[in-house]
Image (tube, rainbow, N blue to C red; front, top):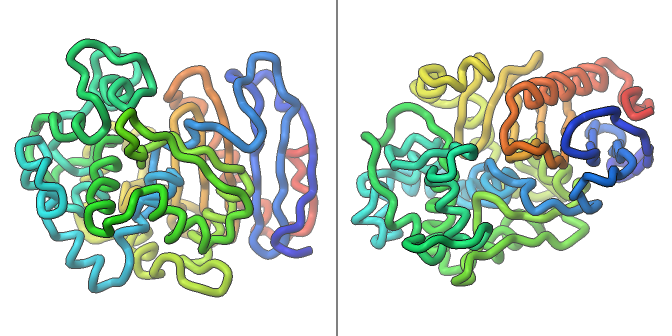
Length: 358
């Protein structure tokens, strides 16, 4: 069976909160299995689309797929990537010189180790992530909110030195996208299209939300089909190759899976270690230990996920709308399910219909 063969299985998922959504499991030597639960009256999901699927990232800008794809833009060549990663953010975005990003490098953005004052606390209405959403137009603006994503970024303050502990900041992905636009002279949506979406052979157009000023939002707000997200994941598992060409240098992805000293320690020193023990964050990817080696994971709020297990040759894509932006118990259950699926498929049963779909 070819890699694009599709067996559609419709099945209820039970009483999982937040509605029922498609899960694609792709074993790269056989087929794509979609798990498409019956719609529920409370589910806001529209087949193939979910604007919040992305709240995480690859080596550039198209992924969480937004974060990840954005990161991929900076990976152009080993020599270029090495030079650009060491460069100061303000070299490309001088408007950030008066903000908390002064002194930060592109690598600090990629690994979310800036010292910028930004709280990713969705339950706190005064957190910077909520102000950012209002500035982007995702929520009604309040008096004093910056008008637009870039003015918001340029107004952020400092909470500490750069290059320290890992702390997930959506703002770092947006600043990375701003720098990519400045370097290339091309809008983010067009960059993702030319450098990621078209090369992976996406069969459908994707959409990305824009702020009131017309700037695309790299950290989230991408709408795409589950099949195309699986293609993105397959590219990650195939060492950056798609359709017979290099989309991302394999060295870039190898570095994410086996980073330099200090990356793992920057993660282990935080509360993230209790949730994802042994993991790290590199080049806009969450990386977790797998039975056969490190697994690249793109995590989005409300349960969105791309799980790319290179050793098991398996990709899992999950679209979701959990009622809460973050839920640790749901996340751990999801990751355990992904690992079980990968183990089952890699055990030599890749040609069978996935048992959890029926």
